[in-house]
Length: 445
Image (cartoon, helix red, strand yellow):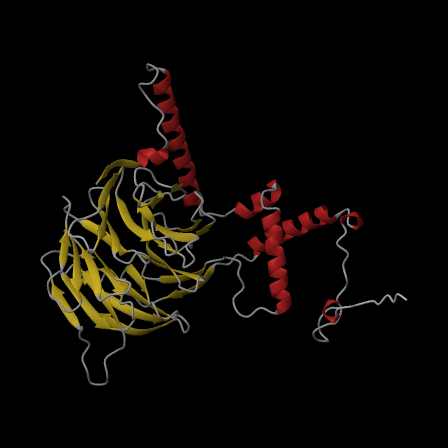
C-alpha cells in the first residue's frame, strides 16, 4: 500500500514575528509569469531613480585648522582616529565618532609636508620645510609634562614626504634623495639617488613590504628594494607624477596621479605601458588612495572635486563637490571601506560616504532584503539605455561643466590636427600612437 504525504517546511510560510508580512508561496515556473521581465525592468528603473534621489554623500566637516590642509594620515589600529597636518606646521588628531579634535600639536615652523603613523599605532612621524623629521607619541602628554617629540632628526635639506614600513622599525623620507632610516639612529641606513634634484613622494608597498616607490621632479617614478644598495627601475612619463598609491590586494599594481589631469595604473613587472588610463579630472591630480578591498580608489584634484574610480574602469563612478570646497590637496579612504576623508585649501576636513546613497545606521531585515533585491535588479538591467542614463547622470557646478566642455573641444581639435597631419604626410611618417603608449617616454633598468 502506498501512502502519499504532504511535507511542508514551516520556514516557507510561518512569520518570524507578528509584525512581519504573511509569506506567500511562489511558483517559479516561467510559463506562469509571462510579464516577469517587464515587471522587473520597471522595478529596476524605480530603484535606480531612488538611488539617485537618496544620494547624499556629504557626512560632516571637521573644523579647527587655521591654514590649508596639506596631508592626512589614517591610524592603522583605530577606525575613529585620523591625523591631519596643515600649512602652518600644526598637526591635529581627530576622533571621527565625536567629530572633535582630541589633540593639537605645533609640530613644525613650516608646512607639514608629510605624515605617517607607525604600524603599531603608538606614535607618528612628521616632516616639514624646517628640515626636521620628528616622531611624536600618539597619546598626549601627562599632566604637567610639556609637548615634546620622542625623537628629532635634523637633515641637510627640506623633506617633502615620509612613509613607514608596514612591519619593521624603518621609515623612508624623500627630498633631494630617498633615505631609509632606522628609528633608533640619527643618520640614514641607506640613501638612494638617480640623477634627480627633488623627490616629491615616497610610498611603501603594503604587500611586498620591502618594495617602495617614489615620484621625482624629472617626471620619473623610481622603484626601490630596501634590501638592495641601488634602485631597481626607473621610468619617465610625459608629465610629472604627484603621488602614487599601491593596491593593498595586488602586490605589483600601483596607481599614479599625474599633472596631465589623468591617473595611470601600472604593473611594476611591465612598465613600458600602463594597464589602464583613468580620465575625468579637469586639472592636476594631487592625491590618490585605494580602498581596503583594492577594487576602487579615490582621487583628489586641483579642480575642486573628488572622484571615485573602479580599479578596472577608465571612468569615475562618482564625483563629489561642494560650493565651499576649494583645491583638494589630500584624500584618504577609511579602513572600514565606508567613508572618504578629504582635506582642502579652505582649512576643512570633509567626511564623505563611499557609497553616496548608503543609509547610515542599523538596517532592519526587511530593509536589508529590499536593498539587496534592488541592487541585483540594477545589476541585471544596468546596460539598458534608460537605466544606464539615470545611473551615470551627475550634476556638476556650472564652472566645472563649462570647463569640461572646453576640455573636450580642445581634445577634439588636437585629434583633428593630428589626423590632418597624417593625411597630408607620406604614409607611415606620422604613426598612430595610443594614449597608453604615449604616456611612458622611457624605461631605465
